[in-house]
Length: 147
Image 1 (tube, one colour):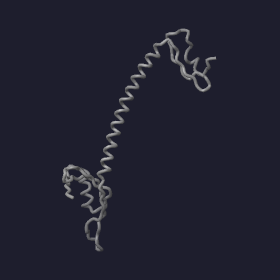
Image 2: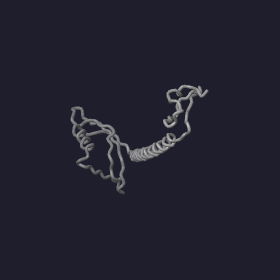
Image 3: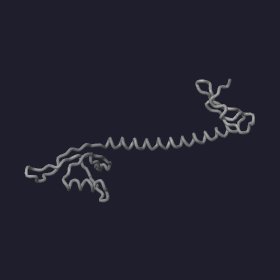
Image 4: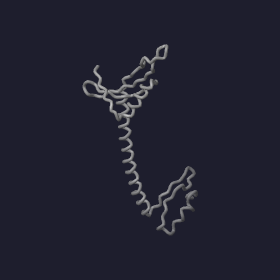
């Protein structure tokens, strides 16, 4: 399989990895992309440990690599889906806030009294009507029953 590695000199992760190799330190799960013969991008994860002979002379690295292209594609799909979902939630939240404001306007201008009671039939919420002088103040209604 033909692989092409294009390492950019300004790629911080590669510079750090090369420094690790030059210092002959172990590394784990270094992920990088490569280009296949057809021009598509693949991803690999590598881990390695330096090996030395009995006298301490550096011999190279022993390691393992895993082809993780499918994992990277799944991560990209999830990130994209998450971004789309967040955008949809933001749009829906704006719509709901707009509709809530419209409903609040209707409630505040209606002559009907809108109320809510708890499980004991006590008022837990009552719309405020400043335009009706005969309507008792909200503070006198909350916690009381209608009878």
